[in-house]
Image 1 (tube, rainbow, N blue to C red):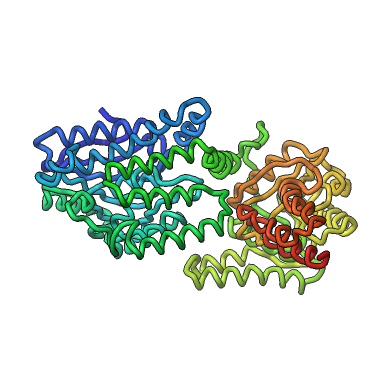
Image 2 (spheres, rainbow, N blue to C red; image 1 turned 45 degrees about the vertical axis):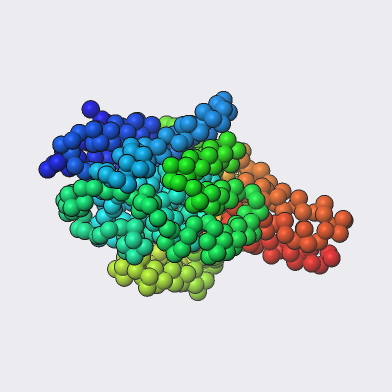
Length: 567
């Protein structure tokens, strides 16, 4: 009995209901891979079964490979040979190839075809969760707008390892496929229907029945690329003149954007190019070869660990001190209604908190709230928020110059100008109303938290919560612990950041904290080129930090100005 796939037979059609236990969304695990092969073999071996439907028992279809499994492959690269990693990587490809060919050779397949597999996509289908439907002979999807399909592996430094680089180009053409393979862009159900990826759309509650009907109506199936005389949509394969131009342009764009530091894009292009001029059985092996290279070279493992494993752990409170119950913020005191303060007020109100937005006078405070008004109006106009939701959000923000309204606040954040005296003044005014027991945070980007805490008679409740601009867009927040910051303050700060759905990192109270210190060091690496006359190289160096959107362009513009003056 399988644990990740609920197998049953209805009217001669096998139903493979994916339901990976212990997961809110289905993911590809080693156990699932084993059981998928077992179910495929069962369908092919039983003469009473005439076809199969692959569906999900969860609200979404499948989210791709379990990151822990990918992490295991990365770890394997340190001890196993590339050949061993290849055999591990190619396994899913071989199972899916067996599913679409019935295990037959090319000659027998063209003569007698095989049993049809139909994918019933009821929601998100990403990565391997999209490659499984691509290997099915037919695909239908829910028509309720919930379907999101794509191959986002490039975003974590990988390439699709379940045949995606081979089947998608054969379905929609090389040029169209590369747009999705090299960017990780998603497709809606309507997009899929327009490209011919989907056979039809159906109401969610009728998906499985419609898929069964499709399997019954086509008892003998074969993939287009397994038929004699197959041609890629839009022309030939990689040797077609149009495809040659596409690959030349794609290679140039990849080089321009990644500077050769991001091999996944290049390997995707190579997989598509090489795979398009050989039979499918060999093409999927080519894909697995490049997938193995990415695993062995290590960049993908680093990106998965940083962008997913560690990020998820941080968002779940991995650094939160133990021994404290959850401390949700209900009322936030926001000192300073400038760009940062206004942004913090908006994201806090959007998370359901009441916010008291204070500035030196009423006009300045009102100007800060106007920032939220603009964001709400934009969200409403784009239908990301209803008018009623926007009005409720704005009603939670009180713009004022009256510190007495901080009474009953359970967290205060200051984001006034970077001046010690000014920060000390607003800190004392706020604590005089709220009391020293409240957790007080500074959004400073340059001043030491330990010295700013001297304005409080209770420095163990003083902490840094450093946002990046624009606050509503930037996901990272630095939690800075001073010399005397207590665990309760750290726990409260992490709970608050979790409430507003940002990613926190806890850092020590050192110059530049983490981001400014790291990026400043990176930028200063251009300095040695100045005495050598390499002005152009110095100008280009900061721009190559394409992975640093937090602070990239302000630093680049400032750096260009400095270099231009010095030259």
